Image (cartoon, rainbow, N blue to C red; front, side, top):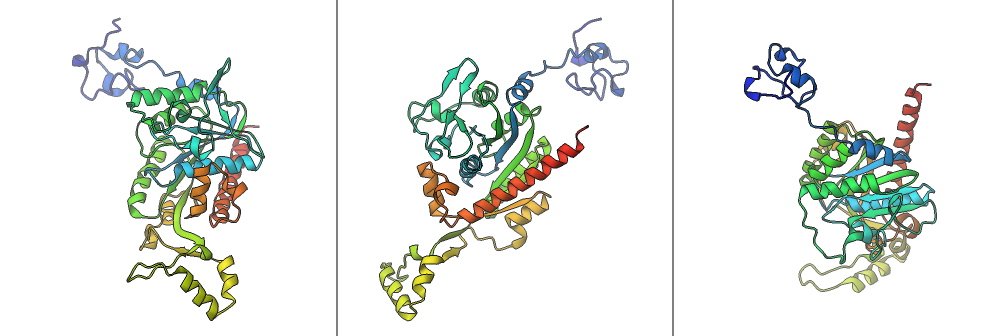
Amino acid sequence: MSSQIDAAEANDGCVGPASERAGTAEACEGCPNAAACASGAGRAPEDPTPGLVRDRLAGVKHVLLVLSGKGGVGKSTMSCQLALALASRGYDVGLLDIDICGPSVPRMMGLRGRGVHQSSSGWSPVYVDSPGGELGVMSVGFMLPEDDNAIIWRGPRKNGLIKQFLTEVDWGDLDFLVVDTPPGTSDEHISIAQYLKLADVAGALVVTTPQEVAMQDVRKELNFCAKTRIPVLGVVGNMCRLRVPLSSLEFVDRRTGRDATAEIRRLLREADPILKEVFDDVDASVDVFACDDAAASPAAMAAAFGVPYLGDVPLDPVLQRACDAGQSLVDDFQHASSFAPFSAVLGALLTHLAANDALAKSAAPS
């Protein structure tokens, strides 16, 4: 029996030598290649990476992927603040940055200038000082001699580093591993889906902003999750309205461009002294990325795909400053306009995860 496959001799309707049905499908009957195909001679060797990843992450209870088809919608912001908030609640957390060409995580976690160390058990994450549980971080940003160095890599090299991150980092036992991803549905996403296919992936948190230009790409990401069988834990609408304290507003004369802040504030307070308290206690809110059609909002998009909508987080300068400074919104900026909405999103996510855990436990054989 020859183990060689001659494609020229293949029957019409051939399913291909790489198919699981090669050599046994109805179209294979009478084909001179049938025996060789059935032996698996045409199939590529099975990649051992998913098994290695499963073994390395055996101590991780929940793997959370933070995804979006669009860049600039706040995936890294959500990933970092989510990791910090979970650690603040006492969970042991890992944060893996696989945005190879745009690693923002070291800055957002206050870890610039830190380096990766290797031990007998693998690469050691860089740890954040956390008031609660442990918080370890891994990013290619720790490996760059300068923050501004460009990473000019083709897909195979990026995928190779992601494989190393998943198989060689010693995460230990974690309640959560949060994975910050780049935009799109290409190399890095395909790799992470393939490498994690045997691991216990809790699901994806999908981030969008409210304008249609962003959501048209986020829909592609939701379709990617469906095709790769990654459960969607929920959609978050980020930068939904600008919210700032009323006292921080500045006023400009529309005709001349002159700063009229002091004059307007004086007139308002003279008109009604109670306004002084209002200025101190009330936020101003305005649409920045206006969505004129309620049926095309982030919440409506989530409903159309049959996935949970976890809530809106506003565009808040305090949150931006927290990220630039490597600080935690929930620990350090509880007065911020974004604190309550972000906390609500976190609560909804944990509730959804708890329900999934309970369902999985009840379905497990006793």
